[in-house]
Image 1 (tube, rainbow, N blue to C red):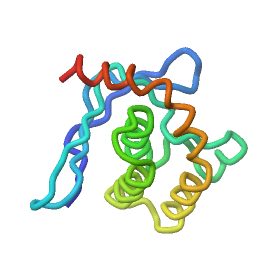
Image 2: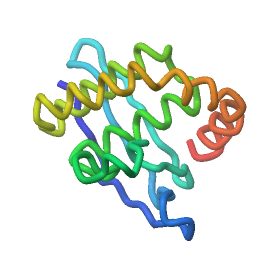
Image 3: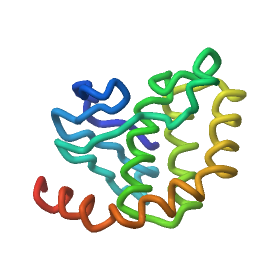
Image 4: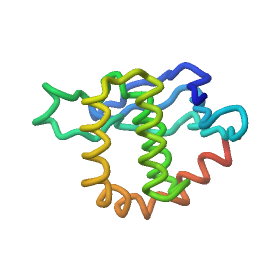
Length: 137
């Protein structure tokens, strides 16, 4: 069964929106027969869930799904997997965190519908993200 294996330790940045990881953060995907680990390195910057401020009264960026959003940010920024697989990992991780079905579905649908622009926008950050990952392993 998938699980988060380390606590998420972050510090806020001065811009009031982004957070920097103070320690590595790990998520194991899959069951005993098909495990792989996603390790978010120290120094990685996240905005948690990229939810427009207009909707924060319903879905705040650092909601219960926040840890899943950090994993998703790394997958998108580093293009670690295809967009569809990255979104699927996000959906699964929200389930692990026991995010309610309606929130999980709403956030996942929003990512599937609007994530294309974030995916394309991160194209220029792939090597930078992968280099950060290499330096901290």
